[in-house]
Amino acid sequence: MKGRPSGSKNKVLHIWNDEEKEYLKEITPGHHYIEIQKMINEKFDLKLTINQIKGAINRYKLNTGFTGHMPKGNIPYNKGMKGVYAKGSEKTWFKKGQIPFNHKPVGSERITKDGYIEIKIAESNKWRLKHLVIWEKKNGKIPKGYAIVFSDRDKTNLNIDNLILVTRHQLLIMNKNKLIYNDAELTKTGVAIAAIQEKISKRR
Image (cartoon, rainbow, N blue to C red; front, side, top):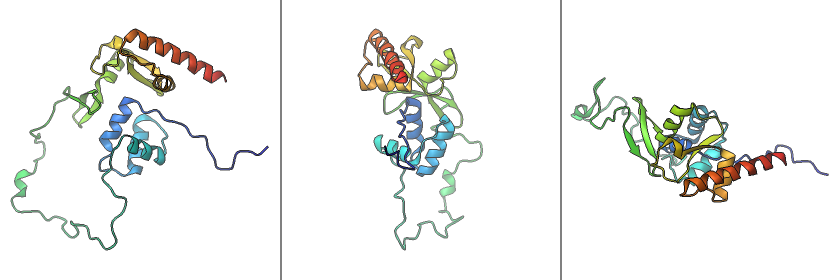
């Protein structure tokens, strides 16, 4: 019987949770794949590969803004312009300590493109999904490998009773088998079913 070809590895599917997806959307523009990989892995203590990062960026229709190369002979528009600025442009510069007119204070909220509520948690322009903040305030830090689902599928219902902690494997099972409903009780039943299927798969 032939063994597995040398160098081959089992592909591990990573299920992106809401917080990871939002962070990916936030940092993708203006960063190269290797930078994004480092930022994601460090923030969430993951070991994602470059290909997994590229796959997620393509799947969620994001754009780094880079073409990957510069045409031969093309000269950057700002070559030799270090320290050069247009006269009068200094009027638009921000002085040290000056607050931009569109500054949002800590505690401000906004709605993401996917309909989630985010809350600003630090002045470094750091935002976080509000339902995760609420769950962690009540229960402590979300364990690695877990995610939060809305039992009634309403992303704006931030009642603590509407937030359910599940493993990413359970979430995969629930999404695959459409076990997340608009009815909270049905979704809770779906979680129980997913938990049973997860245990069965681990015993095989």
